Amino acid sequence: MEIKVTPIRGVVLLALLVAFYFWGGFEIPDGVSRRRLSRGWTTCILMFVAGAVSISIVDHWVGNVERSNIRIFYIIAGILLMAVALVWQAMLNSSLEVALIPTR
Image 1: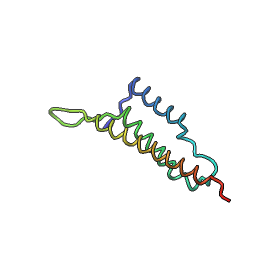
Image 2 (image 1 turned 180 degrees about the horizontal axis):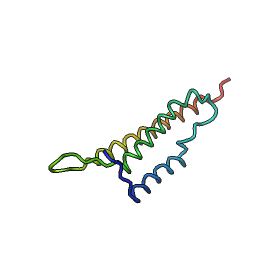
Image 3 (image 1 turned 45 degrees about the vertical axis):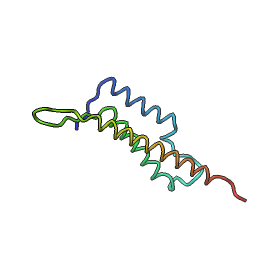
Image 4 (image 1 turned 120 degrees about the horizontal axis):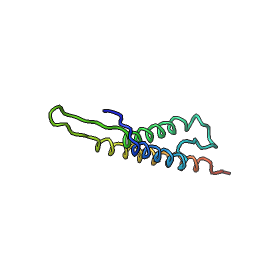
């Protein structure tokens, strides 16, 4: 596995991280104790960033005689990581909204 940074791959990584920022992925919501959400939220952030790095700048060649690139597996794994992170954050947000509903 090697890290190969090209201008296009750098732009893809930056675009993914900026989109995640504007989606609100880097900010833990207020209203509940941060200790309760911080572990899950931090895990979601790390999963999304790892997926974005996997999609954009990771390259992996295998074989000695006929070398082949298995980058497609890293792209698929990165997409899955980012999707799971986004779904998990949406679930955390929805559970937070349910927890903040006032009860009488």
